[in-house]
Amino acid sequence: MKTSPLQQARYQYTPKLPGMLRHGIDEICVKEGKETESVADQAKIKALFPNTYGKKEITFVKGKNNNPKKKEVVGVILSGGQAPGGHNVISGLYDALKKANKDNVLIGFKNGPSGLTSDDYLVFDDEYINAYRNTGGFDIIGSGRTKLETEEQFKVAVEVCKKHGITAIVIIGGDDSNTNAAVLAEYFAAHKAGVSVIGCPKTIDGDLKNDDIECSFGFDTATKTYSELIGNIERDANSAKKYWHFIKVMGRSASHVALECALETQPNICLISEEVAAKKMSLSEIANYIADSVEARANNGMNFGVAIIPEGVVEFVPEFRVLIDEINELLAGSKAEEFNKLSSWNEKYAFIEKGLTKESMAVFALLPQGIQQQLFLERDPHGNVQVSLIESEKLFSALVKDVLEERRKKGTYKGKFSALHHFFGYEGRCAFPSNFDADYCYSLGYNAAMLIQNGFNGYLSKVSNLSKPAEEWVAGGMPITKMMNIERRHGEDKPVIRKALVELDGKPFKYFEAHRKEWAKETAYTYPGAIQYYGPREVCDLTTRTLALEKE
Ligand code: FBP
Image (cartoon, rainbow, N blue to C red; front, top):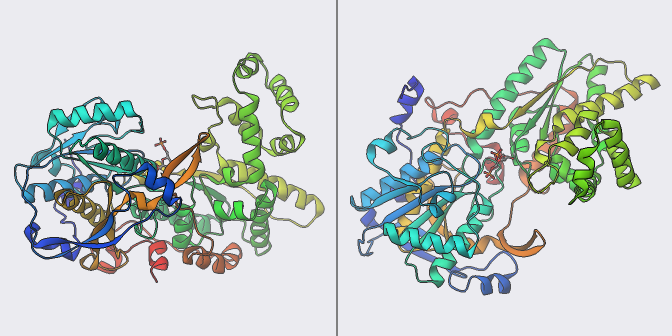
């Protein structure tokens, strides 16, 4: 395989471990903390996880490791969307396993959780691992979104584990995948399968975090990649002085990515979905809010700007949520066929007009035709609207244009408005991991091996104190059940890891809130530039602004 000079150089990079994990494996022992309780619904979660609930949080400290050195055969799975650093979790896990006992085996199940149930695997060796160290992507074994959640799947998993002599499974995934990891851990314990399950917190969305998990891996690199691009666009905007750029950034639901990019680049506008929901903002209120910035800047001769739009925002606009629910209802079952038989958009529009409530029709009528059609034509296998495909960057620029036209007619707005659109998502998910993610991920994997070696089950690999240099990081583990509560999912009460949305009273949002008025009017752009892998520590090992502010 042909490799680039950077890739060659990255192969040689030695990820930094937390100080405590730098000791020999025989010199690291477990310090037990308090017994844990789930964040809510304690009685219900305890009843659902009788074997794994309430275990103690643990930290690794210097001391004699008295664990018998039994041979470990570990299976690893990458689950869900790609996030920079996944390869390093696997290489950290591999190195620690081999360091503990050269006969230990690491098996990679291919293409996500389905690799376990279909027993599609490979066995790692030095040569294979070395070709992926410190690189982005999940192509080392592939990823997938199959969920491991049914009794049938668990039974097959037990058989596959038996066949390979597997003693532990490591699941690298987001909140859903780690919820399923906890359920699998409980199943293995209840059935005395002799297999433990350890999770690792992954997602560029940054929404798997809580009192124990300071951030999910991949968020650092992905937001740095988007921020570089946004900064470059800001500089272009400030050079050409003729475009407003509407930039949608990934983040399926929470707005952590958008907020972090805003803190890094100081754009004129950044919408935060959680605020939109809290203030119950309507589409036209949002459009007017953006138009105010366009107008204020135009009045100062600046017919250009940058607006960041979080991917999930439309679902947080209450009237839009109702519209989507009504559309899903309108096309449920056989009604979809009736709709699909209509040949022209005019006929379809009349069908829609008849089926929606007056309020939702008013919202629908506001939308540009392209978006209206998207809502009805691109549907998921269950027939529901695919909200993530809605081009919200185009939606908001079209709505802003309409508002500005109205203002022009009234004579209050005299500027020019020319919009360009971008969507940054896949560009960041497989970037070469920043030094932070390379170190953090390697540490998570290495630490997962330590948890396995010490016999823990149903734990999330935990590395904390992340705003400090790596030598001060703290390694340990937290029972996944501690992060769980009961939520309504698909009409059923389910135990799930609580998703972290942007906290409107948290320091990152407060900082943004304190500055955004000025940023909306002035050109206060900052240009973060490309991720630096080599050079001074204060440039190369920077954490996100979000983490820095949260830990201030
Ligand atoms: P995970 O939560 O699985 O990490 O994935 C997050 C994400 O990257 C979102 O930001 C985005 O909405 C989604 O995945 C895209 O998914 P897909 O890769 O299936 O298109």
